[in-house]
Length: 99
Image 1 (cartoon, one colour):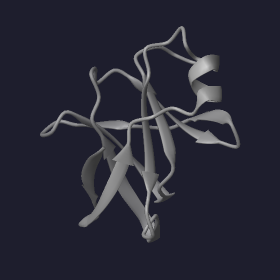
Image 2 (spheres, rainbow, N blue to C red; image 1 turned 135 degrees about the vertical axis):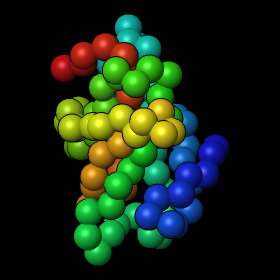
Image 3 (cartoon, one colour; image 1 turned 60 degrees about the vertical axis):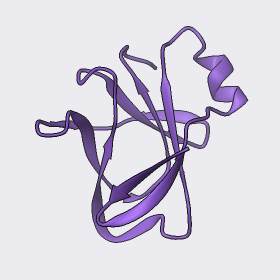
């Protein structure tokens, strides 16, 4: 478990993939981030930044069991991959294109 601050609020991240996702993408080197909590939505899009092993990685949101590619930007100061979201969800980071 790890805590991150997003828009000034702290959130708990669980680094676990569900078994379906893990089995489907077992050939890929993936990192999984699942946000849980009562404050998982924003009044306006919030900036979410995830730690990554490589800044040229791809970030996907898991929506109804499928991967949705997200547009990301590298935060040069922190080396994190960032994107905007209206609510927090389940994200997968991979150095390889998945789909």
